Image 1 (cartoon, rainbow, N blue to C red):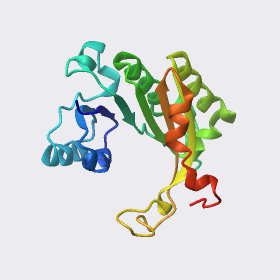
Image 2 (spheres, one colour; image 1 turned 90 degrees about the horizontal axis):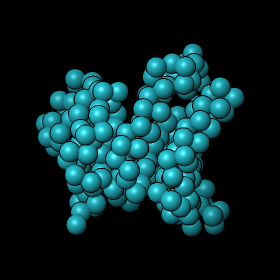
Image 3 (cartoon, rainbow, N blue to C red; image 1 turned 45 degrees about the vertical axis):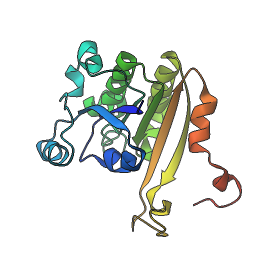
Length: 194
């Protein structure tokens, strides 16, 4: 049986490109931007549940069980380039709406990404609230800041010609060790930081 996932704040579908070689099956996406919706519809035609704040538990589960819920909620409220309103900003609060959808679906895996500013937003309390809520849902987790400029694709040394640091949180239902194994690969532990 194929590994299944749902993509929240789907954007133009980068996750679908990333998992294509793995033959994972997308059950549904959630995205409200018209241009992004048009791109995903054109390339993949996945079921779009629309506004994540309006998705019900029934809607989240009507397309079958999900192994992974992934997404990168809006970063403007956490970014050091923004006003830094954190979870008080409705865009920042979407991180908790993301977790509500995780609770609805109860996948084995969770993947969430955002800007490094989330680590210091509201003196770290916003990120702590996110991790605490993830833990209350029963997920063990690990997080790490990764920079896309060091990700190798098809043998190319640098796939992205810019610094693009992001915080990645991986959760696994019931145990933090599986989540940590995903993010803390051996190569980085041997002094090869990139």
